[in-house]
Amino acid sequence: MIRLAWRYLWSSPLTTGLNLLLLTLGLAAMTFVLRAGAQVEAGLRRDLAGIDLVVGAKGSPMQLMLAGVFHLDSPTGNIPLSTLDKLRHQPLVGLAVPLSLGDTFRGFRVVGTSPDYLGLYGGQLATGTLWSGPLEAVLGADVARAAGLKPGDRFAGSHGLGAGGSEHAERPFLVVGVLAPSGTVLDRLVLTDLRSIWALHEGHGTPAKPAGSAAAGPHDAHGEHDDDRETTLVLVRYRSPLAAVMLPRWVNAQDGLQSAAPALETARLMRLMGAGVEVLKGFGGVLLLAAGLSVWVALIHAVRARQGDLAMMRMLGAPAWRVALLIGLEALLLAVLATVLGLGAGHALVQVLGWVLTEQQSLRLGPLGWSEAELWVPMAALSLALLAAAWPAWRAYRLDVTTLLQAPR
Image (cartoon, rainbow, N blue to C red; front, side):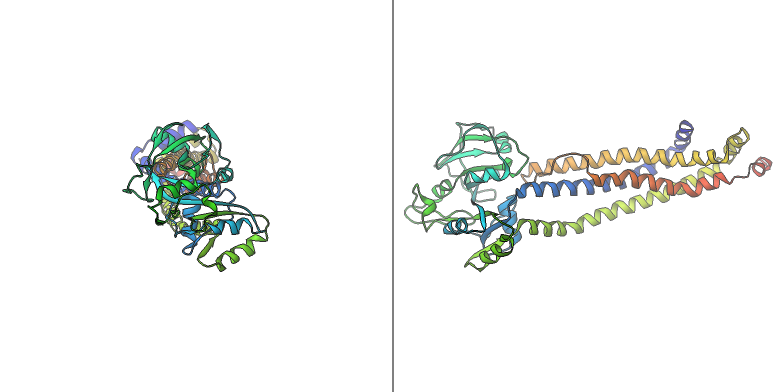
């Protein structure tokens, strides 16, 4: 029966090919939306790394979150370094990690921070050691691979978070370590000490304050306690659930400070992306509907064209249900083939998206694998096939063999 249904299916190759194309495109669109959405969400959750609050200069909370957690936007400005001491002395704060931004290296961001930043993501060294002083850098796995650098090499950063900034050729970094790949935002960062950022931007006796980076003042080994120093952001982890209610309110009440809860902002970001996701889902749904109607029409015509063959099968002893099953098998075979092609095409598109995001040094997608939501794809295909085949199969079941055999040829 399966072999016969397969031969019948491809007896009209153009019609079958069109139906297969429509089904495949619809299923591929649905697979891409479900899989890409799940992986983007997993990547966002992974890069949140238990960060409960981002503290920065007044501005957009979304911008603070994108700049401080995902490193996808420019920060809103600088805040006094004394903010870090205030947060560390807050009873509601379990951990406060400073970030100073403002420079890049071949498009990868140079981040002045403390070793606690590695602990947020469980970062481990592949080779070398952590920085111990200014102008020593630890490279993320993607940075080291793209630049071909190793411990002992030197490189010069560029001023600004965009392309075209002037190089700090007179003060190159020394690579002291390379991080093991972690699949997190650490892979695409250059990490160094806070004092490195200050040293790069210090003027000749006059403090300089580059936009979006740590301010520069007279450099000293104890810069963290200098009231003139600035940093860009502070990442905060709460000590207790009570902090979620009280700490953001306290931060927003401080002069020039703004807080952003990454979990809330990420949820808002996903809602903003939801409109585009719904459009893609709608597009896939329209393709599936068109494919279902096309399969239904094709099967109706097939039953009419094969009435003689079906009558002969009945004469040879095939029961009516078996003749109807033959029609249903055609639709199911088409659905199975389209499911395999659609899932393959959808997965390939997601891999292309991941490659493009990696090349753009943007958000890294979550780990590859099967999403539970993808189970809807074969279920949708099989349901659509059965629905399209129901009426043609019923017509085949109700064929009057005697009338067909007596009809003039």
